[in-house]
Structures are given as structure tokens and as C-alpha cells.
Length: 138
Image (cartoon, rainbow, N blue to C red; front, side, top):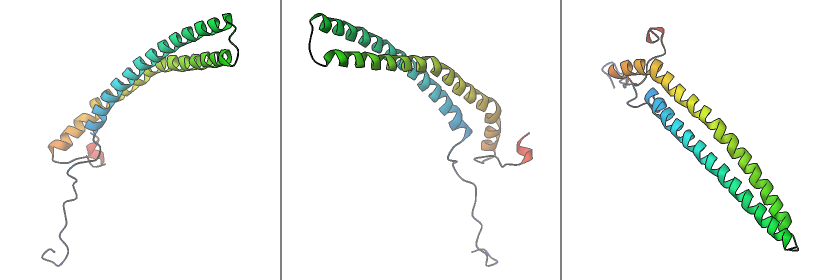
């Protein structure tokens, strides 16, 4: 307790914020790289689906030529259809993900350009985050 009988006021400044602008900038750069890698992976999946369809079509033709009874021909058709669906979706992902990567990268650059300086000043002053006041917006 303080000298006047009231409890002593503790320091209310947090030593470490849960999320800072530095985290956001770093995270955006990492995420952009991961998204680009995901686009490359989607291209590989599409290519492998195309090879799978080609192999299944060859198998289906061979089975038909040998008049193989049963459901195997039907299953080949279903697998070909599913592989085509996966290929189409993987192609769409491969085409769309680079734009997402660029958007994330741009967001990180904007955060670095506009928010890093106030965060640096705040950090230099010994605080974790700026107060939400008009004089911090200058």
C-alpha cells in the first residue's frame, strides 16, 4: 500500500504486446512465400492428374479391347472423371493463388510504409503500442 493508505498503482504498460506491426509485416512476407509455394504445388497436382487420366484412359482402352467383364471399366470412367475435376480445381488454384500472394505481399509493404515508423517511435519511447490519440496520428 502507498503512504496514503491507497494501494500502490502498478505499471500498466505491457512488456510485450501479443501482436505488433513487426509481426504483421514478417507474417505477410512469410505468407506470400507459402502461397507462392502452394501455387507451384497446385501446378504439380494438375500435371499429375493429367498423367493419371492418360494412364487410366490407356487402361480403359486395354480392358475394353480384352472384353474384361465386371465393373472395372465403369470404375475407370469414374476415376477419369474425378481426376479431371481435381485437375480443373488445381489449375484454378494455380492461376488464382499468385494474385493472393501479391495482395498479401502488398499489404505487408503498406504496413511497413505507413505503420512501421510510428511503431519504431513508440518502441524507442519505451512503449509497446501507441495510444489511440490524435497526436499519435501525425
